[in-house]
Amino acid sequence: MAKINKTKYALLGVLNTMSGSGYDIKKFCDSSISHFWNENYGHIYPVLQKMEKEGLITKQVEQTEGRPSKNVYSITEKGREELKNWLLSPVENEPHRSELLLKIFWSKDIPVKNIIENIENEKEECKSNLQHYREVENFLKSNKHEIGEKNRTLWLITLNFGVHDEEAKIKWCEETIQTLKSIK
Image (cartoon, rainbow, N blue to C red; front, top):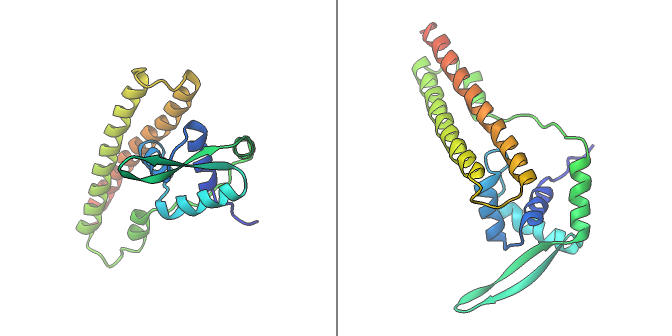
């Protein structure tokens, strides 16, 4: 079975939340879903063009004084229906990709201290992500941003997944470092 390009659904989700330019969409992705779903401009713009041709979104050119005009995209009813159908379909499991695990797996000829260094760097990155998640959680719970109770709950649930994931990775890093120190 052919894999479906999920960028379309990520963009439909954004446009179901707000209308915006490609830049606005990327900015929204970076500030919301980037910890579990990454989109880049190289994916966004071609998919926006394709979705416009499919009638899933519309494009309106906005003129701004002293600046170049910009394309503002909005979701259509057809786009909402497509998004809803995808959201209701079963999740397609995809293999997890980790450069760290790939490097560890093939590191038999690398000094243990270098492997530990990579794991310590991962642990620090996880701690940083965990701190960021806590800040986002506080922001969402502060009610300063009116997104609706259901959206807030759904966003907090995905954030909680990230918290648990980072906590588990930190624990794994600590255990792995101890194990590696024993084989020096």
